[in-house]
Length: 183
Image (cartoon, rainbow, N blue to C red; front, side, top):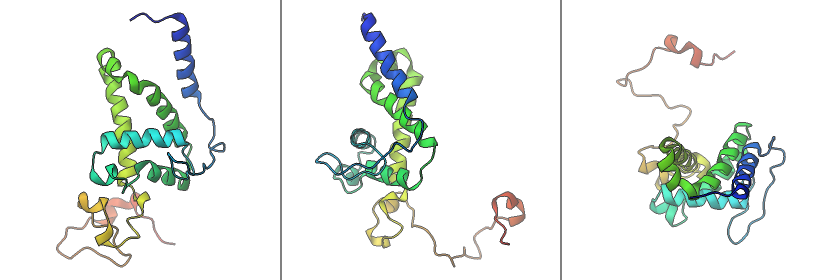
């Protein structure tokens, strides 16, 4: 497979542009709903469609396939509620994955570890959108929850909840760095 100079320069430019990407989250704005994407607060419609495609490939679970759980919309809500500079790095990787995704077959032959990294990034992104509470399961009654019962999680405990007496307890003196002392 011969690559022309023009194709190499074009590919290098696209990859460089994906790596450089935006330098701040200030430029991120909301997008109105379209036929292909709902109203978005953080992701662009093309990022939404890409993540939705990944979710259907990686989580072939009924709630994802029938649209009951929208992984990409959950990620959009999560990123909008928790803006962090770390998301810039995630967006840069997402751009690179978009470029590399059609070439995963070739990449897996040339650099198997890179192909595994691409799959790993997709899985991490989809798991964050699927298992996080961005779909609002904490506010719904236990019988209406969809994702948490599938993984055996009953949901958050009330503030006054304390484990039963026979359940082993950790000695708080061992966890000093993790316990916030009330002033």
